[in-house]
Length: 495
Image (cartoon, rainbow, N blue to C red; front, side, top):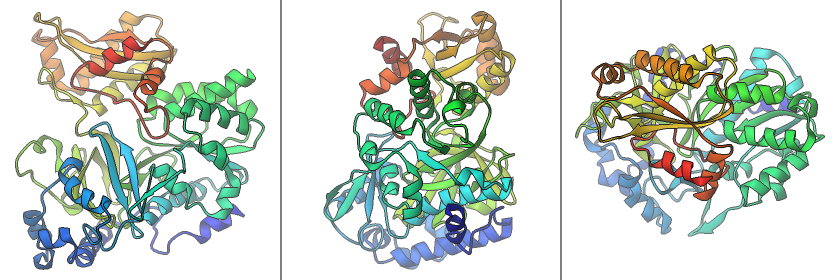
């Protein structure tokens, strides 16, 4: 019944395998023109001469790239209840988010942009059905670990977490299949909430679970602690994990060990600003970029972001395996907005990507230009050699010591199962980092810095750190890398 509903809701313009290169370019240009046309009489449109813009080159001359801080002057007008500021009328919601690169942000969600958040999840599940040809996962319960659905309202705009907002737009059929119940989902304290979710779900027929990997692991740990059993003994029909927010690979082994077997996984790339991509093929880790979803994409090579006037390109000029900052304009009323994520294209027909990191998450304390992708892939390859290792969480930063060759990269790792030989693990990890990043290798060879060092974090250090800063649970996560070691020092002091 749910599968039939899902199929009936798929948009006619939806393409399971994605659009061809030429189709995607044309769709993106049509979206670009429609966005400008609909917004030419807004304050932002008037300020930026939308009525005189008839091509992308003119648009770039009139609309600079902005991050949230630069765009906030317009957001503040909207928050005061003013209409027609960046999009006609008022938004339906503000998705309230506390990102790692800014303070509290209020991201508009309009009537026109809401379907992007809802439909992308439908497409993800429908594609899974098309690939597997299995109805079984859709016959039981579904659970997405999310923020509270409670919303406040100010100046006729409702405010809450994105996951809580989406909760209000579940179809009735899905609500009947969803866990946990509304009362449990409204619990503010994450530890109490996750404990109650565990109590509520034990004995239920859970078949699909979604969320950020460390919080799924936390849920599994509580279930195992309460029952003394593996997850597949409690939820024998659990078939699929939908995950996003952080790279899945470091958590994969621990999660599967908790389950007692390997199950299917699908990656998503959602944010308050939009649901940008998802894994449309269970056999490929690449993510299908959402071309026809009310979002016009621009791309800037990451090494150009620091320039006063960085070179911006549209989808038709992107190249494979180049690290781009993702810039969006959308029917939420965001314009050339730097979302803070970086991506690389893995396929251009259709357009597929992988998330490579964050524009403000990097290590270059010594000129090494290390990005999130470098540490994630290096750790993945290392763990393939040290098969006993299971990682709960980790973060990386520079340890600066005022003596030549003594400074190094510090890896703070919370292990579920540590390596049998930590020294050999460090050597292998450092070797893989040098293979990934030539600047890092040169600094090692020139004795500017020494080999990386791994420090073992105490159990639940990361959870306790997030709790201490009021960001435990939901869509919150610890930054994977930082350009100083302040986060590492704070985590080490928690226990």
